[in-house]
Length: 66
Length: 259
Figure 1 (cartoon, rainbow over the protein chains, first blue to last red):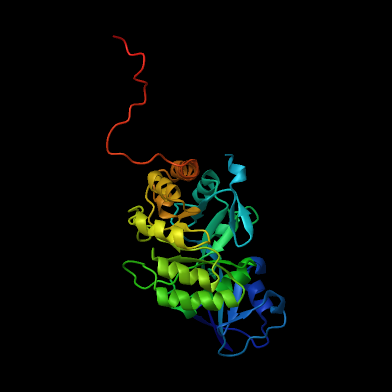
Figure 2 (figure 1 turned 30 degrees about the horizontal axis):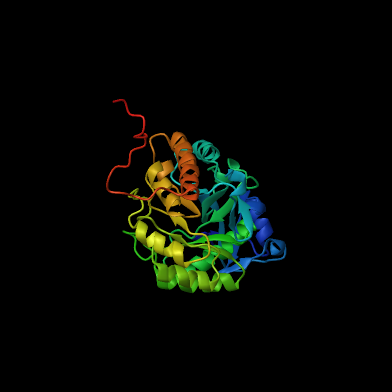
């Protein structure tokens, strides 16, 4: 399946969860927020949240800013 | 008056420092951390951005202990209420805190607030339980509306963001101070320590700055200067200045002059 990850189209196998995606990317869940199709995915839901073809995912964190 | 007796209370939280500092534009994360330390700031602003998927770059929070500071995520770069609200929801999830610095910009050149969108976003965010600190125009009507909507502070600009022009309209800031009850924090425009002191002497509850420190030739020294300026300005305000007079008033007694 194809998902849009932070604005980039990437190919991923079916059955991928948010939890697994973060693990694959080497991202620690504590410091990020995940949005799926413009809705927040609560941290408690990462394990169960399956991704589907065409999903738009944003993974954000804090950077320097004023 | 001791400083410990003069706490700043925002959204139910108590702070000793009245200087709030941004974390952008520094030469390195090491420099950011050292400047923050030197500034004595307890509230620091951060931006919300996409993570680097290649993970090749280090992260700000590798250098700054989020337990030591109150992180105030901003909505910098948002030009609509919808984008700002979306950013705040992400910020809350990432930081596990309701505190947000709400800014909705109207124009890339001036970075002045779009007050209509700002009010719209503030209303939604307060209803969703956010603790909202809005960056706004130095306009008492807008500030009063933000207060009425439930914002815990108002943060009028002293001058355009990053301009270093100082407090361009101290009279507007005074009018705001006289007409709202929530803390008034000057956000944006400060260039030097005297600008920060002026904001505090006007009676502002605090000052928020980024470029004035990060863009200085020696950001660490400027961070200390700003810390002292905010303390000095606050003490000066509390002490009550003398009235301005056009003519001289001798400090030494006239009695006992030699004949």
